[in-house]
Image (tube, rainbow over all chains, first blue to last red; front, side):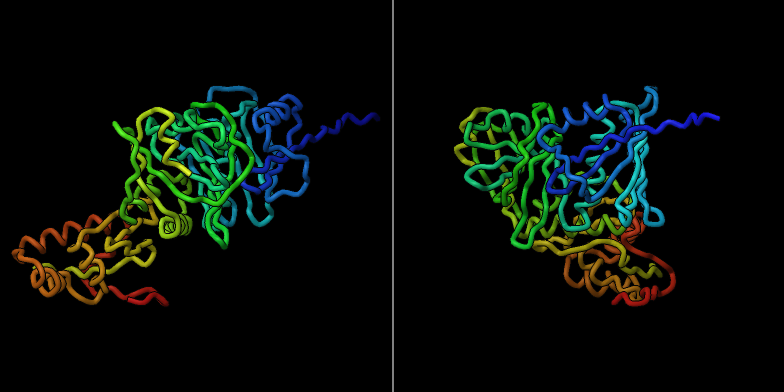
Length: 271
Length: 102
């Protein structure tokens, strides 16, 4: 009697953002290639990972990427859900799965959520901000949509290394905070460089008629930081942790308002 | 006269930053920044003191406000904070959960 069971080849790659390697497994070579292209500069072949995901690809179907994100924890297992994906992740075993169709946006959303959860546990976070390195120091430029994140990124002179034009990756280290490059892009659609540097300042962006930097009170800095943090989980413990992380950050990193006109001279104030 | 007791919810995240009391609801992530009088209310919310006593002894004595107006404002704020599970309100004294200092 012949056996009809066929072994499906498992293809893998590791995407390392903020020195947190995430290994992904799929059986679809085209999807693997798409991941390699999407996360170019952040991909390596290491088998060591902070977590691993098996990706199950479902047939393309109508799915709403604007549907609300639900991120919940139950019995030590996180469940992540949006109109276009479903995922689970167990921190203890460092394993999980993702179900989606073969598009780059769903996996990107899962990656952002998973990284926020991992970072929250150690006092770090993802922030709606552009970030860049100049003279060995990292600078963050935070603001809501249209605040100028893409503009200031586009205006960066050649000696500036862009980490991201959209989502900054912030980790807490014993000696201070460090910003890492991310592949999470905004309008510029350009991946950040996979490098890092100690954070020297956070600027809250405002467009105006002159370039100037103004200090802001610590409480206002905390409010603005909290308003720009990426945070999805419906989890009381994590809410408290992210609150404490934000307040700790503004007590250790200078936060100012950067008012700027959209031309390259604004970078004369930075670095 | 209000017979309400109020207590800080120990599950809420709160910190005084540069003289401003910031509180975040752990339930829905709503962030509140309390003004001076609201901060006094928050700090005095020990679950054992009547809201009316707090208003009379801590707010009216410090600010030039009518007791009835201040009490009404205090009740409104307390109910709003309770709606976000930041504060607990009850017509009975509120005892602290084990291990949580009042």
